[in-house]
Image (cartoon, rainbow, N blue to C red; front, side):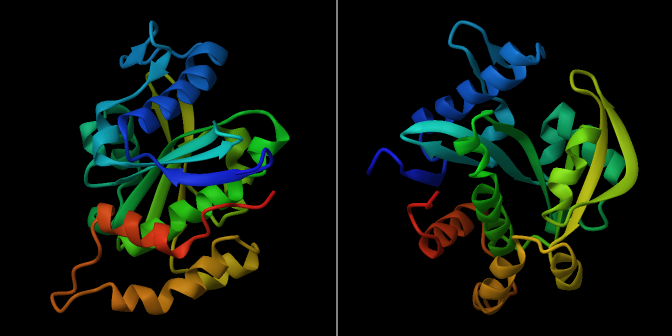
Length: 228
């Protein structure tokens, strides 16, 4: 790996998750002053029990975690008091095919921000492979345009998180290809390339890939190194 290498990965080891937790601590706790119950001020990490049920994606620049985001099924989200509020407010029609993005964090450097798109493309790819048809997230109002570029739209519903405060709820229809095309979403080429693979990913019983299987399949479909 050269000094200019950037990589997208999924946290598979405790060390990976600690690296993600340190970025969360830096951005959520040290920078924004938010006080979450699972914060480890000694180790300077922010890791939650829900992480065990989730896929945590991260981007690295020169071996340092520069960005991260979490993907979890809506049916598992009630295990976390913050995401339980989101799912309750959003009222997804089918929690079994709905996923939630959360704990998005990125360093302010341009090299880190340049990895937001490929990192979220990896999240979308894994979500599709896991059988997701809708994705939800809650965000501050000023970040709506960022997620709108991917195809997320406001649901017209909000929530008041006990730590994060007022948040807008956004939703993405993963199979609304017309909308993805209308906003020039970076998800569209991923959807086109995976449509055939999604059909192959279902067995005779119609079971979509599990999260672990989806992560493995997603890894096999992406380049290991992302050019900057």
